[in-house]
Length: 499
Image (cartoon, rainbow, N blue to C red; front, side, top):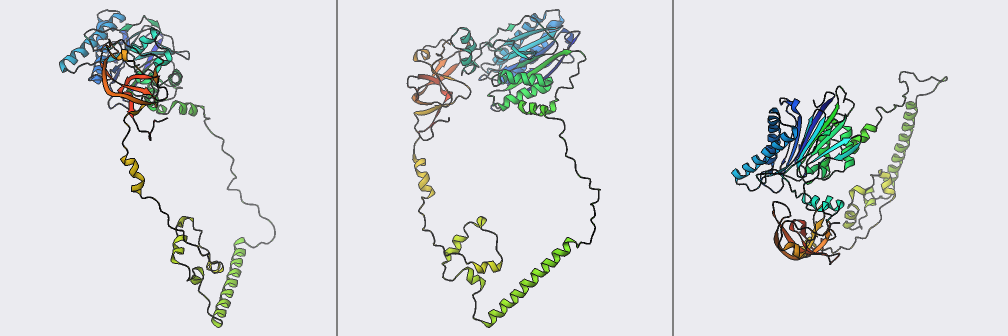
């Protein structure tokens, strides 16, 4: 209970996403056995990609932050002090574990919220985010600790470019990379009834816009909202693990039963909205009463089946009589060709039969015998044989052609690929940045000028090495420089680049 008049209803969900082999995200909700009168704590952590044991780092972070926070609160410390101390201990535990394992770097980003006595506190490091939905408007409560965000704040690139920057996930603050770490702790913010808080990893906010998040947060109870947010991000082909915690603060005793249940949470938001708008029942047309007998008419009438039987008998008598007369004439006169000889004359080459039987699915239904003798089929001239090349002849050129290794395509879905200049590649100090105008898009054709990867440190505090190769844009030769090797795929002149 966060306030005498407010209750928290919370739910969380996580998924590895459609690309990653394992889930390195973790989250934790308040333990019912914890002294929650000291505050309700919610934590999401995301293992840093490219570093060792990211899943273990995030699991350590959420468990230690949760436990140490309550231990610190029990000795009388304030919430900001308890949060900072808990994050410090989590950072040190992850760093020590990496040293014991000799596993290089272990790290994770984190976002944490505490609700206590009508106030909200946020701690975060990295690009995991906190959002607040209030009165239909979504507000971001955290600032991304990323290299790209720093470029935006220095006026080097714009917000639109930052959203699609190839290095937008390079974080400048994490837990576990060093013995000490930096965090941002917010000032207390008042909680209002019907506030909805969202904590999420970058795998969610990277692929969803504000409108989608608003619709889901407003339409579902917290657990259903968390599941639907994650499933929607997976449907949008997020490139990362994805996690969400949703917390709704409401007046005590308010009934949430009118909000759709988790049973429909797996549907896409658009489908859910349409389902909610459908009427509960469709009008059913009135049917005639089967128990009402048909009205009788005066006079005597023969039943319909009697008339039909008489007609059939009359037709059969005519056919039998005609057949007998026909046989009598055949016996007294000259020999008449049989129906089979009439349909297929002896002078028709055998190939005619083969031609007429090529497409059995297109032949008309068989006609009665009398009709077959009346109209013999025309004599067809066989078509001359066609000289088509054999499969080996058609595939031989493609099999023998060697790929042009200097032709390539930019392959960086959902992001821009920046072109770095020679001066930025030589003598890197981990603070270099590319010019905003020198960018390539996914699918752009390029020529590889230097295919030997060149290692460059940065751009981030850990100064990890990135590999670049030199290319030139086919559409605009003035765009020449170094791009990340992972963003280039070789192709051939015949294959080209995907649109």
